[in-house]
Length: 368
Image (cartoon, rainbow, N blue to C red; front, side, top):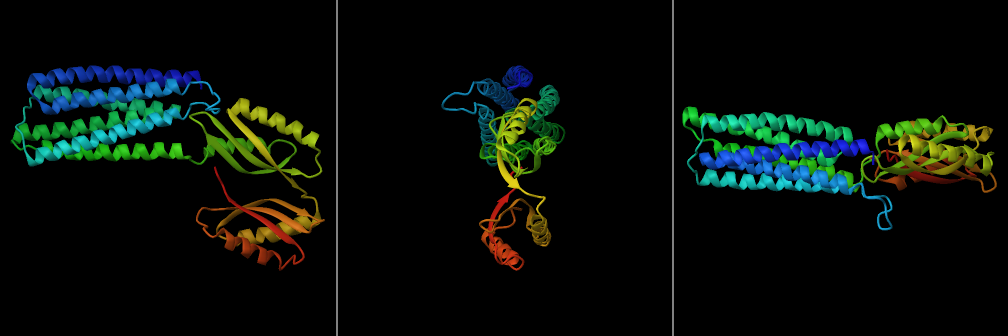
């Protein structure tokens, strides 16, 4: 793991822990002094935020563990599990607030609010909004889902405080208590935010497509390498922020010897590892683009692809003259559900032009 990234996450988590602990102590003391349940709730919520920052801190430290026999790809995904825990914590907090607010609607209680307590909540809201925005910014910069979840929780707390202030002012100025209804609104916003964080974190754990920008850079690096005709079918697997491995299929002139191929592929593999931090392995397709028959077959296939909405491209075209067999791969979009129908349609189409030739068609989707 990049040490600068680690230091940035740990520093941001430390700031969050310190600020939330101070806010929690002040709010709880003022809440007890003024008998304000609203202020006490704000204090408890700040303690929860401090816990979330602590979890982000712990997750970052644990993800540094070196690979071992049980986890040869390292412990980077622990950060995603930390984000998952924070998301669940946000949702649970939201549901607890929702339950308490509904109880207050059914059984109203007398409020004890002063302008002093409101001023404390207002200052807290400004601090939490700034802290949340800063934490989210650092979380995006470092690709830390846990830190982004913590920042979102802080920022949502500031929005909740604004709603609390508005409902309290209505009570102080007009005598109408909207506290319980404001609590319902705040809790629903918190639950919605928690579900969003949970969805994002689960996507990381289940497996997202590889980063598009990273894939573009890798494709550019590969395709500019002398000896490689084309590249496709890239897969990138994420084992934590900034930890990638994957594979890609390469089209290489069938006249190249194994020794020649090894020379430029090994150099390419090391260059990608050092410059992009990606461990990449290669699959090889032999192609013969100089053969006249290949050029004619390529045009026939290109016409089929151009007129088929779900086929995005084709590659790995090769003809085995001895076996009279065509090999080809299609890249299709995710809207195509019946791959077998496409296989049969293409074979029927192709054999109108080359009835003597068998077709071995591979159909796949793009992974990045």
